Picture 1 (spheres, helix red, strand yellow):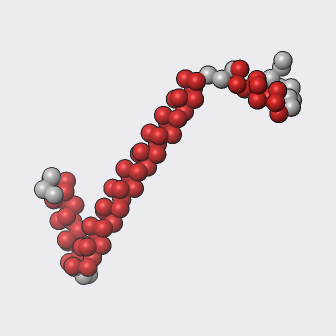
Picture 2 (cartoon, helix red, strand yellow; picture 1 turned 180 degrees about the vertical axis):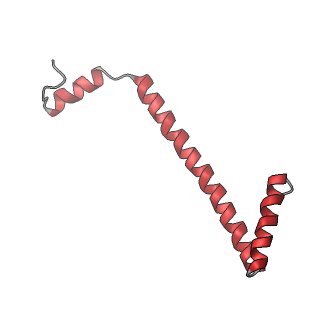
Length: 81
């Protein structure tokens, strides 16, 4: 059968099931899971940053906020938590 030829539903399903390569499906599922995990990690990091910046904005106002934000960023880069 030519793959470009139109097949009715049952025949198309049978052809797909006969030619199924489970390693490709497994790799695709792993990619989906990996990308979902990365999205989750990135969203947690941005959420933590948003919470920290909001806390700084409540404590400091105006120019003091920017100085406190710079101190916080430099402290985190240095590993001082």
